[in-house]
Image 1: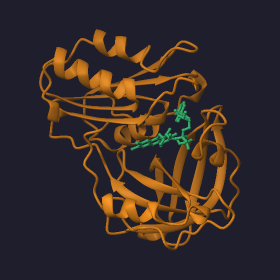
Image 2: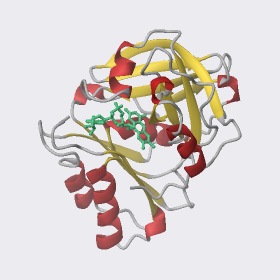
Image 3: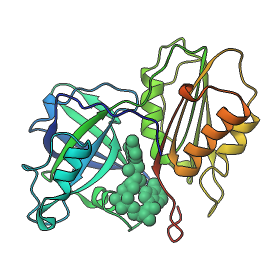
Image 4: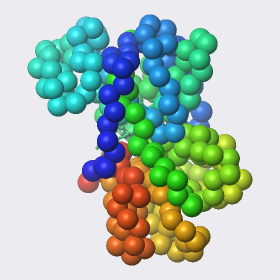
Length: 266
Ligand SMILES: Cc1cc2nc3c(=O)[nH]c(=O)nc-3n(C[C@H](O)[C@H](O)[C@H](O)COP(=O)(O)OP(=O)(O)OC[C@H]3O[C@@H](n4cnc5c(N)ncnc54)[C@H](O)[C@@H]3O)c2cc1C
């Protein structure tokens, strides 16, 4: 569930590898990529995201992956032999350094389930990966103020947007975490107020964030909003803005980053 239009970058399939891994907080592991095709990656900042191919078998191949992930590319991916096919997950470009080319990715640690989280927890330098750039969701139409809302998986996107937005921007950013110790230093414009929120243990995502957004006294003028994270947060913020605050649909960029299952709780 998303209204983000995917952009197919000229870089196509970027094959690279892990150069470092660091646990930067109790539930966030930062993996740094470097080498190979990485200099071809065009860093655009904000919430730029990509499809990341992660090895799951010893013999996984990265040379036969598609160069885009639109329908044709996805079907080509599915037709590859399963025994040598990496898994694909979506991640955000947390930070970029140009020389030498280095790309940081922050992986939320959500337990033993899945592929990407557990892989990041133990991956060693030298591991091969590949990525396909998908562009940015953030498309500020030149609003009077900005509203950002997201959970721990959207922290890299919100941190990037705050870092890259004009320094005279005004607005509010709401970030809901399940553990306040995962808070990161943010480079936000002075007039953007950051609201760190913590959801109650076992509560559904949005437990703290949705009431806080509902209670916000809106500054005057046109708002542009970005809502991402667990499905209930992306959908709940959008619904509130469009249905109860009369914000035009096109002024809300939203994306469900993950969906809470009945059995796995953050
Ligand atoms: C555009 C975009 C950008 C994203 N950027 C980031 C990013 O920079 N950093 C980041 O950490 N995530 C990010 N995500 C979210 C990430 O893609 C998902 O959390 C993904 O499901 C993780 O893959 P996995 O292999 O670890 O788990 P999966 O195999 O996908 O899922 C396994 C189980 O874990 C559960 N699960 C998955 N994610 C979470 C979670 N966060 N908390 C609790 N349970 C979970 C699922 O419900 C499922 O039951 C982004 C998603 C999108 C769409």
